[in-house]
Image (cartoon, rainbow, N blue to C red; front, side):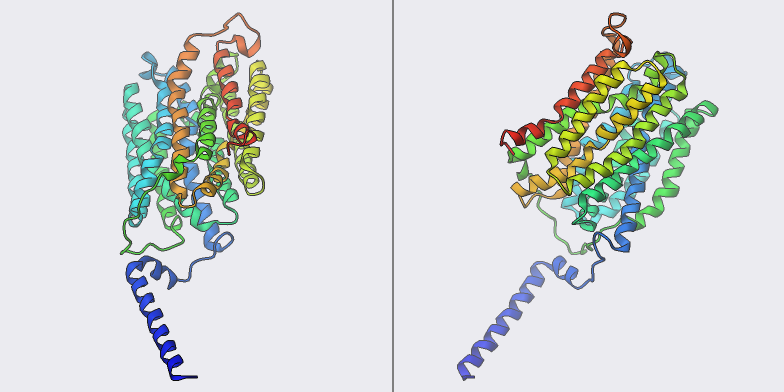
Length: 446
């Protein structure tokens, strides 16, 4: 080899090494990650332990407000809240709605300050527990709104949303399936919690049951914080990350988001009102509890199925399957229900199709990132959750207004003539319009 070639080789090697040194200084977090053997994604032992922890967090955090219909029935019929019951429906929708609505802000904070994510989860556990304990001393409806509603939502948000960011690291090829399994936790909790709360509220009091749930959160949620952790370690020298919402400029995001918002406007109504509806048609209080539990049980199946389908077929096709089944079940089954067997069938079918709608979100995120590959999963998820939060918050006052009007009471047949006709029709229409994303794809907008 010529001397000039040797000099060029040496010079090239020196420049390469110098470039590596500069890269390490500019991106210390990335360099430190390279030095750590990362746990296996998708099917490793630690990935499954993480998914189990996420499933339990989902059950503990979301299962409680999703079973609020049992508390609503109790508060509406027992003093001191039954004396002035206005606003009771707002308690549950506030808890769920604020957790959804706060998602973009919490996700942005977690994205901006990645080193504080695990601390946020710990603080969230302390806050949500405090909210439940304070709510046990409530004597007025507005006390419950602030504690069981607002404070619960704030704590739940900071405890829950780090899990979403971590899941994106732990599952890559089977992301839709993983989200579906984790979100099934809400359904599993929703099967058990209504019976437990119905028994406890009748035997003890709302104060006792709220404190019991707070204790359960600490006892079960505390150890889970060890397993619900990031797969990719975050360096202490990690710089603040920029936040970009540029994906919101894409038509794909807004078309799918519009359908998400419209569907959520009516989605929560059956779960909240089935217990009182059962009482209206002459069934016992346990019948309403059974109906809510059946809905939540089928939601477990639905989230896993819908999530897995988003890994295999286009998300708008999955959305169409969900909305068609939900629409038909509301108009045909709920609208005709005047007996326990038909009420149970409606709960099963509605849960099977509507219960897994949020499991389409991984597919929506995938489509949005095709248009903007710089978009962060956590931020897209946050905006989708906020869209669902709009529906959850609006559901409370809107459903109370529709019910107070007693639309078609005595002038229509079967369920439509019970005073719940307006709620039934509104739920069915919003379920149908939730398929807007499929229409958008057929029209070439996606």
